Length: 462
Image (cartoon, rainbow, N blue to C red):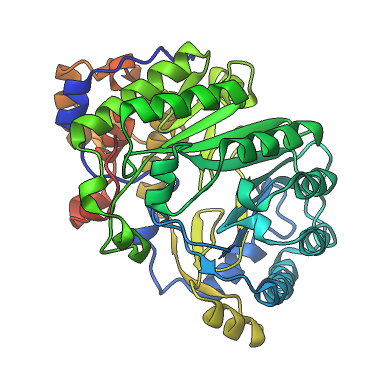
């Protein structure tokens, strides 16, 4: 079904706003358990071997190194200028690939590849070529695959971007956050507009099919007037996609955020003004609201996939491809194999120690129960399409939807009374007014949130 237009009601958003998961997985990563270790992961990988019903394969590589620290960052990163550390890491990534291939068999076709971080472009051109060579020697990467990389324009000159194009990358995501100098100083990320524009131009010249720009609202020193200028500059660059993230200030969890002055953070009403301004300016510029925090041009594959009902959500956000098994490499990387999730250890020392022992560097994971699977399907439908076809869930998971989700349907009435959702015999539909609250609506179906109160760890939904 086609996604409806977006309606912004600041009063309703303020009333229903609360901390909640981003649902790149269900159950969410904080529900993974250490009882799921290397042997469980090996078993999940072995199940792919010779299985004609195995899902397509996607790869994620976590590259944690950064030259400098951005105070807002909540990623697992390593701050260094020593390329000896990245050279060593690449060698160990190859070891991890070998352990995985030993279980799955060689030559699997890759539908998607994503390099994230950290700063993947911390790697110099020789290191970039070495890592891509390690992947291509173990997996089949067809020319029609979706190969994306996260880039910091401060470490990606036109030569580096050209190398990325030569290596086969066809999608690029540039961290911007905000172009205002005062905001950049407050978060320790000085990145002139001309530098970003040069990187976008280099990506166009290198043949990238899609350029995404990441923005964050709620950063210190941000005002609607300053953000207006950033949005004008973003739309002038005409990226195919824009990601607009809500800054989650959790200094007790993420140490770099302790360097941000709380007094510089915008108040709740200013944050709402920043959000509504961004939505207005992006939609006026022709972007379609995909969901959560993503916008895309109508002719972009992301918008097309949503219109066709093929949109999917995984650990890298929204995806145009069918649901894949995701094999993840590197520290803290999270993968999804069959009905299992798995996450690697978080530090370099642990990672190297495990691989030196020829042991998969797994920290934790989870095998999904039947209840997790049906709830994941409902939440995925809400996140991607703003609608759940009741009969399709019943047929796929052999449940009586109204009986199985009687409690959830009762809880949804609070949203229905405010016109955020509509419920009939065939559909649960998030209305245009409710689309910005889709995370909160999805939380209704999250059984794990009922068992332990952990919402304070999450960012707010708006």
